[in-house]
Structure formats: structure tokens, C-alpha cells
Length: 350
Image (cartoon, rainbow, N blue to C red; front, side, top):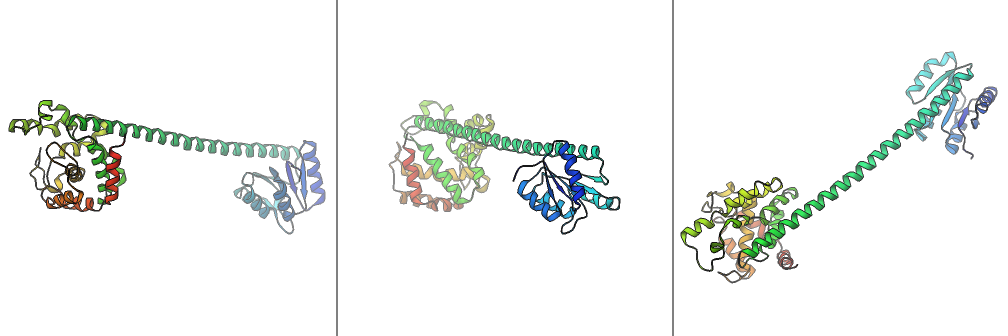
């Protein structure tokens, strides 16, 4: 059906023709309907932007037509024609979405002005909605770009910290790839323990940077092949404090401080530097203690040969409740051995 500007709906043929001639004279294209039901069929077929309808008609009146038209197309403009006796009904039609109502007999100028304004208002509503949709799309796109940039930044942080952890491992003889393995073990254990995903980033930072304080330990002590003297041990035991002082100055790494500072504490309170006991020790540090011990037992060190996984687990179990949090030990034992093996394999990849 040909696209038209205005649908005229009136059961009075003479009124329809008068309205038709008025709008034709103003260069509008029109379609005509005898009643509300026919008008609705014509509207659904042609979707005119403006409908001009009488209120009182057989079969379907103007109010029902208004409701059906607005339901089919919320952007459609409707002008209601009414006699003096139906003014209250006409006013009520405004609440149902009619743009305006015109009193009969129709004033030509008033009708054309109302039609022009109805078209303008309809166009403004469409443009405003389109603008709102455009803004919403741009917000979604900007949010996506921001999330992508944030993920890239997080990846950069993680890669940098892994590189720093590897550099620390290399400096400490016999611990190559230690931080990468312990990082994997710690995250797997934390998940078994029930640590929320949102808290794992800070745990990962702490694990990767746990020995950063060894930067401040002289090489003569750190790399000494034989046993340390009591005085040298005093210096070596300062590395958690040195690490804390380094890390707490960097805002995005402050969540790593609990592990850096407490990773040499022990469940029974015999650790250092503060002698914390039980749950006084931060959870991240308690997780680190277990997985760090597992890695130390299962890989060659200058002072010990690697032992099988079963032997490592037996030793960890023996020390549960002394050096290690029993709950964390249970969580670690729940990590599948296939996952432990995968972490070990990936730790030696470039």
C-alpha cells in the first residue's frame, strides 16, 4: 500500500471528504476509513505517521482505535475530533496518548496547525529516542573498550610481576621458576579453600613478590653456599620487613603486603618476623606456606634433593597444626595431582 501522511477515520462520508480536501490542499497524502475497525486495518497496513479520528463511530470508536494504534506504533500521532458533548472523553484521550483534540465544526487553520505540530512532535520523539539509543550504544562501546584496556593493563601488571618473580628466583640459587609454580599452586589451593575469585589477584601479587625483600640482602649472605652464621641469619630474617617497606609504597600492590610480610610465620607461633599464631596470620600467607613447602620438597635445592609428591604430602601432613594451617593443608590435598603436574610443566615453558 502506498505510503501516506494522514489516515482520516470518520463514519460520516461528508466529514471524511471535507477533511480529505483540507489536507489535500495542504499537500498531504491521505487514506480514508469508515470506522475504527477499518481504520485499524488501514493503519496496520500503511503505518501513517498521523491519524485523525472521530470519537463516536459504530463497530469501533475513536478511543479504542487510539489505544490500538498506539499499541501498534508508540510513535504514531493521533488527533481526536469531538463534539461539545464529548469534551470530557476527548480530554481523557490525551491521557491515552492522543496528541490533541479538535472541536467540531472543524476550523481549517486550527486543524492544519495541530497536524503540523503533531508531525513535529512525533519527529522530535523519534530523534530523541534514536539519540538515546546512540548514547547507550556508545556507553556500551566505551565500557567494552575500558574493560579491554583494564584487562590489558592487568595482563601487563601480571606479566611484569611474573618477570620480577622470575628475576628474584634466578638471584636465589636453585629456585628457578619457583615463583611461577608456587603462584599456580596457591591459586588452585585458594579456590579449593573457597577464596572468592575477586580476592585472588592480591593473593597472586603476594605470591609472586613474596621474596622481593631479598633485594636488600647482601649477595655474600644470599648466595652463601654453606650454613649462615647467627649474625647472617639475623640479616636474612629482615627480608620480609624490607619487602613490606618496598611493596606498601605502591598503591596497586598493597594487597600483596600480608603475604610478603608474613610468609615466614608459622601456625604454632614460632615463625618470624612477628611470631604470629594461628588465624592471626593472614590467609594468603597461610596458603603460601603450604605450597612453598611443597615446591621446596619436590624440586632440587642446593641443600636438598627433590622428593616424590607422596613424600612431600606426608611431610606437609606431619607439620599440619605446627607449621601449617590444617584447613589449608586439607584444601591443598584436594587439588588434583593432574593440575599440580600441569602447573609444574608450564613453569618451565618460556
